[in-house]
Length: 198
Image 1 (cartoon, rainbow, N blue to C red):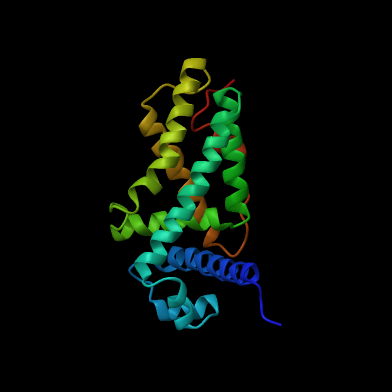
Image 2: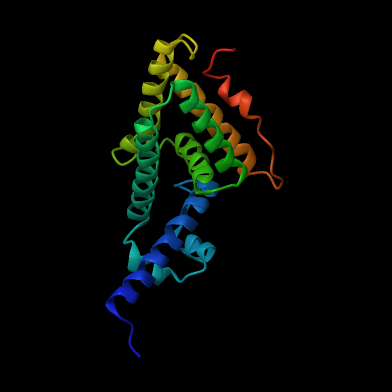
């Protein structure tokens, strides 16, 4: 019995997700420059032709990954911004979420490692990465400014504080993703980057 249009779309969407999720991990381990479509398709467990049925080039696949991660970032931070709680609580929620993502070695954790690889290669500053990398920093800066007004966040330049916080998160992800064992990360350590001692 032939598949319905909906079934075909569902199969196509599952394969596309399999490709993008596998590619995030592979790009994180090998970098953009070190990724070859032939090796990537083997890593994912599909034929090279199948991959090209979904993405015409490595750049198109990479751009799709960044769009997916940017959307994920945007939705998460927009939902957090809507919650009517103080900045300290928001920062604690972000830190808890980041630690869970890193300890569980999720797609988000691999995306942090991918960011580091892109910076090392000099591929972070181009037209298709700009909005992707700016979303988390901008959203965190807004929370930092709110916290400084409320008196819960340390004094300092909001941009520098946000960059420092994300640098630590990225480093923790790199250490954990590349480790065979799961390292426990202390939540208070991450919170203390931004929050005043109480």
